[in-house]
Amino acid sequence: MQTLGVIKNMTSAGALAPRRFAVFTATDGVVAQAAGAANEKLAGVVGVIGTLVAGERVDIALDQIQTLEAGAAFAPGS
Image (cartoon, rainbow, N blue to C red; front, side, top):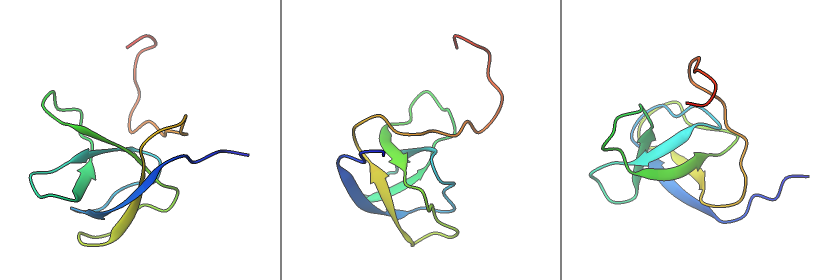
């Protein structure tokens, strides 16, 4: 059984895939899916449901060990 820990409900800036990193946007309380840019500020991990469009509410896990899904292939150790 997974312990979810601290969850914060935020607003999505667009589609968010489940179990991916979310980052803060310039708007308070709004998160977007991480794209890997160096200047992104990590908010947490998107919950098991995700969102389809901007403006939907989404759960973001802020602590504990969370299951992540890689958005693309990556080299071991990177």
